[in-house]
Length: 635
Ligand code: AHR
Image (cartoon, rainbow, N blue to C red; front, side):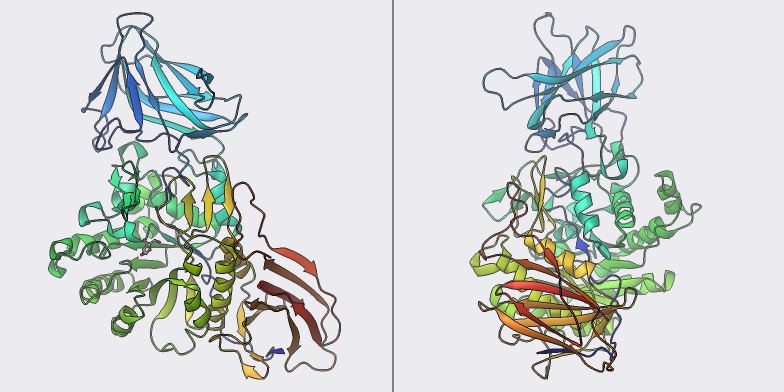
């Protein structure tokens, strides 16, 4: 028996309660959400032709038009009409293109000698066909200036190909120089030119997130300080955003991607814009001057507290970039990029998953400077990784002392942990910072990959987040994205190849919580005992909320047991005339707990909705084994 205390409308549920955490891991940015199809478009990878294959007379130059990306290629006539000069780009695990769609090829080019115009021929080539490799989209561009200029042409493939190659031929006697070679679908999310892959951005929007944390994760910190995410390099014209090494190039000996770099094409402007377009509050996280301690505990991987000046200035400048007037130096940069209106940034994170006494020492001067300049800004500190809670025990009191507004906790833990943490937040200090459960995922049964059972236990655990919404103000599953051919870490929430994507069962759990988060917590009892989570009762975990905008009572129940369980839902404090008038139920279940959605079978585990027959003041239902159910009820 579940009794919802409908007359004791409790804590407000923050609009930021459920959201998204984006990190460029598993080819989440270049090769993923960022729709650029050319790898190493500026020839700045350490081996400058990585991702490219050249033929004929191709040479590399380094005095190009973009200061921070000086390399480019020179294509010279081979000396014989049947010998070709040019180069192929392999894309990210191939170049995925769809029949009938349009792709914008663009390039900065010049004819270095002037005079007669040069020509290049641009082709999409099918690599899958046995034998002959066929070009299936071809266009020619005339390069008519001795000065660097941007040229573009549309390619319209007449077939769909997940693994095409982009081929560029020199098609003239005059020499041609090429820089920043780019290929984008025109059909990006919201049609932006430097845009995002539509299906992936749509999946984010469909979750109706309240918060969007970016750009990491360990990416914030880098493998070392030199490779930390530097937001200032990620804004302004894309041609001049420098390359950065990706900290996830190398993860444990068995996952190594030597060509995994960050183009910064998906930079802070794009992150802010995406947050706005999906209706989420942006939460940028910046380096606190400590490199990824997970990797590196050397003293020289840390900036001394007295030398943090430029790091703190980066944080202040970021707030100006997001919110400053167009007359301020960084507000002007934002306006020139196309967004004169402020992004209305309210939250900023300093440091990711840091630990040890260095972290609070480093955080303190950031907090002082940000508070002084922007007293309304909410500052998110970190409590380190969850190594059996030890870091948390040390860092939470420190975060309280420093008056951080929220503390970001991370836990990637097994099923037993998720089953035992339903009451995790019941006894957290109500006088300290609020909780941001910023990275979590259930790593089930020794299987570190997505499957339904892990998502069910995440749903059970999340009842505890919801019941404690007075202190838990944000929660985001992690990691968000993974390319099926380029992952370093799993489970992940959304998987994709070059053409298609798939939402996992964990995605649907997050979505159900976000869509039905309500506005206020409602206390409830299970078999006369207040629901506090813990290990659940008979494997049942539950929470209830009220949505005052829709006047709905929403009860979420995860049945983690192997038995169907009869549930009686009652509503405490109702007068005689108060009766149920409408109800529906959305369930996520799978007969096979190991099941998950795949690109080939994207709907194996999806929420299913049905109407409930309601009357009177009590709802009797039977909740199937291993099922997460959301009951949406109206008086
Ligand atoms: O999500 C993957 C990694 O897990 C993040 O980069 C880091 O914060 C955590 O250790």
